[in-house]
Length: 411
Image 1 (cartoon, helix red, strand yellow):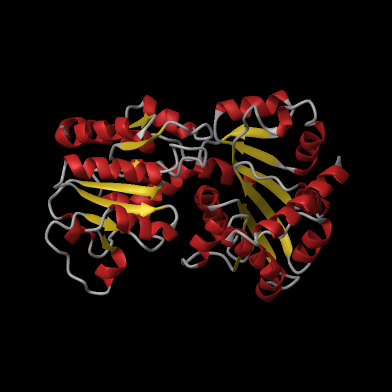
Image 2 (cartoon, rainbow, N blue to C red):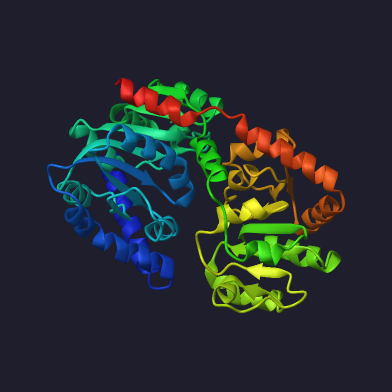
C-alpha cells in the first residue's frame, strides 16, 4: 500500500504539472513549492525548535491559529512554521501580519522532498487541521519522535478509512498521530469504530477564532459612509448564485445597501457588468466620492471580509449553492446577524447547528433566498431575533483551544 500511495502522489504531481499549463492557480502552487525548501533554510537553523502548523487552505488556518497562538505563548522561545496546500490559503496569509517565522507551501509528499524540507530545523510539535493527512510526512515526523496532533478533526463515513481497502491508512494514523482533537461527537464516535482511541472531543476552534474577531477593532474606512443609516447586506465569498440573490433584492428593495466580497477577485469585471452603478472599494480608497444612489460596493481586495460583517444587518455567505463548499458562516454569526446560505454543506456541521438555533437559514435556489431576505428587510423584529440567536449560538460554545492546549501541555 505504501508503494501504491507513492505512485498516487507521483501521478498527482504529474497531473498538477499538466494542469498548470491551463490553470494559473495550479501554476502558482507549483512555483511556490519549488521555493519552500529555500524559505525554511533561510528562516531556521538546525538548532531551532519549531512548532509547525499545516492547513490545507484559509478555513483550516482560521481553525488552527488560536491553538498556534496559545502554543507560542507557552513556548515563546520556539519558532513558528505555517504551511499550506492551497494557493488561496497561502495568498491570504502571506500578505497579512502573522506570528510565523516562515510561511510556505507544503512540499509534495514524497520521502525525498519531505526529508530535504525538514532537514534544516528541529520540529518539536506538529499539528494538521481538520482532515488533511500526508502519510510520508507523518511517518517521517514520527521517526524523529515529534508530537503530532490533529486539531478540529472531522471524520465522516465516506472517508477512505471506513472503506474495505482503508486499513493501511488507519494503521498509519494509529501509528503516527499522537492525539486527535475532534470537532464533534459524531467524528469522535467514527474514530473509535476504527480503533483510533487516542482521541477526545474538544469542539471547533473556529468558535474561539471568531470570538477573537468579534472583540477586536473592526473598523473599515469608508464603509459607514457607504452604509449611512440604511440596511446593509454583506455577501461574503460570493459565487454566481449569491450575486443573483443580490440582483433580485436590489430590484425589489432599491434603497438597500449591498457589499459584495467575491470569492475570486478575477470576477470583479463580471460584477461590474451585473451592477453597472456599483463602486469599487479601491475607488473609495483612492478618493473617488460616492455618487447618489450608488448602493452597491464591490470589494476588490482581500482581508476585509470578517470586519465587513460587523457593519451588516444580514449576511449571505457563499459556496453553499454548489459542490465547492460553504465558506465560513461563523465569521458572520459572531456579530449577531442572520446568516443565509445554500443547502449544499455536507462537511459543515456548524451550519446544521446554526439552523437548529434559528440563527440562520438555508435555501435550494436564489429565488427562495431573495424572497426570504426581502422578508427580513421588511420585518426588523424577525431579523433582530435571528441575529440574537446567531450570537448566542457562537457565544455558548466551549473553549476548544483551552481543552487542546491543556492536553498538549500535560504530555
